[in-house]
Amino acid sequence: MSHTAQPARWLPFVVLGIGLTAVSFGAIFARLAQAEQVSSLAVATWRLGLAAIIITPVALMQSHRELARLSRRQLGLALAAGLFLALHFATWISSLEYTSVASSTALVTTNPLWIGLASFLIFRERPTRMMLGGIALSFAGSLFIFWSDSQSASAGSQPMLGNLLALVGSWCFSAYLLIGRRLRAGLGLPAYIWLAYGAAALFLFAASGAGGAELFALSGPAWLLLLAMALGPQLLGHTAYNWSLRYVSATFVAVVTLGEPVVSALLAFLIFSEGFAPLQFVGFSLLLSGIYLAAKGERS
Image (cartoon, rainbow, N blue to C red; front, side, top):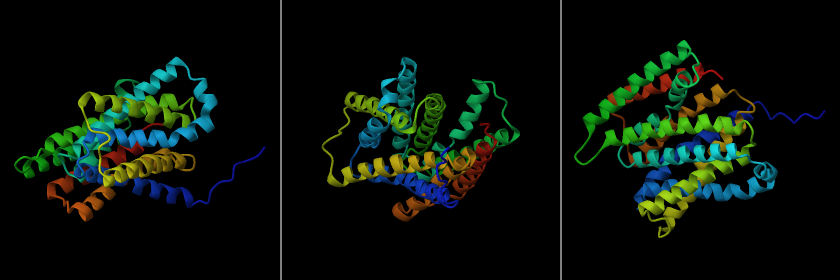
């Protein structure tokens, strides 16, 4: 019986670090693409559309038999997962027009809380004390962020709307993960990613067409930014997380993903000179501590 060679012990941690850095550039690339007059809907559409196009040959070569055997239920789940993934990116990327990168990325990464709550409300799983503590801390942190942003709102800015859109993005991503887990149980990674990204891209292309979003008359730098989003945060970042799950615990990966708002906020400070208000920093710290506790307390 042959065993696949285990990678060096340090390798999954390096891969996770690369994945975290790639994912953290998502908000930065989105903000830069918006500065190139690309609408938020077009940014979301091309992030997933280009990723789906790039993954197509890999999925067809490695998973053509799996894809040919798809049941109606699997197709239905793939469409549902794609719809929530499309809504996640449409709302979260839109949030970056109105609020800071730090607030947006902190609030959009709250999905461990919502998954914990959904597990209790839908599946009747009793939350652990750690999960309850995490929810309380994160709720307090969110209130601090909303309060800080409402105090610092300048004329014409709408940070509260941006924060709300980021939260809606987190709810949609939680629904995507809950549906995706059921679909992923019977599908290999390339087939699953291709179905989820492809379905999400189709919904976003339809929404862009209905909303009149410009998808093709874009500048050269805009196309480069959109391609970088598809290759970096979408494909490299999420693939690195998925690969690492074979060698480290899901809880550890969930905790590593909490670095995204920290790295994104640091990049936003360096690139856009976005600083922290004192109350925002308190909220940010409480929120991340709460998500950390919730991720540790989430039952497998």
